[in-house]
Image (cartoon, rainbow, N blue to C red; front, side):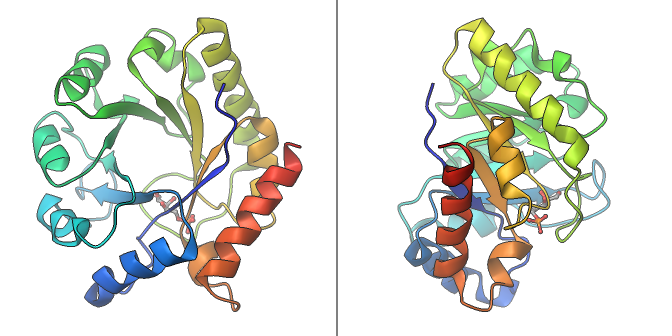
Length: 225
Ligand code: DX5
């Protein structure tokens, strides 16, 4: 099991008029990858960016990109996100009528596939697709907006997903997204998350992005030492 702690910023809180500089700054701050919160205004009550926006900044960093597809029809544009430079596509189990087929189609595009679970969705929803994913994302907020409160009651589900992956004997990691901050990251890491998505907590650190990234990483590492 890959226990490496990875910090993945969400660019949702960024001033979109300075998106390119934000990507450069995040790279310099030491993040491990960048998560793009894609929202269609249907699956979630918010609307963000399309593949062309991601493609426009792809050349500014060599960091991996993952697209968190909070969209009703992830199959429709899967190829576009990969062409835009995303190495991983995260689809929501709740949005996929044929989740097994969707994950296989993402892998056929040459990307890695991941599945996200909203707070109300049981871990059992991914029981039969763990062989197709390299990551399961357990949401610790209801998707659509940054700056929400971490739902600590998701920690047993994080641990359950981790156990399911171990029992299945597959190489996949657990990601957590929503309300990750200095006071919540330890609980998520102890529960089994190794990829931690943070948005507002990174950008509101008065000591800057570099401090925020290092602080979150060290807290997660200390919690799992
Ligand atoms: C919700 C988004 C947020 C974002 C992180 O749809 O996915 O969780 O990435 O935002 P913070 O870290 O501010 O909760």
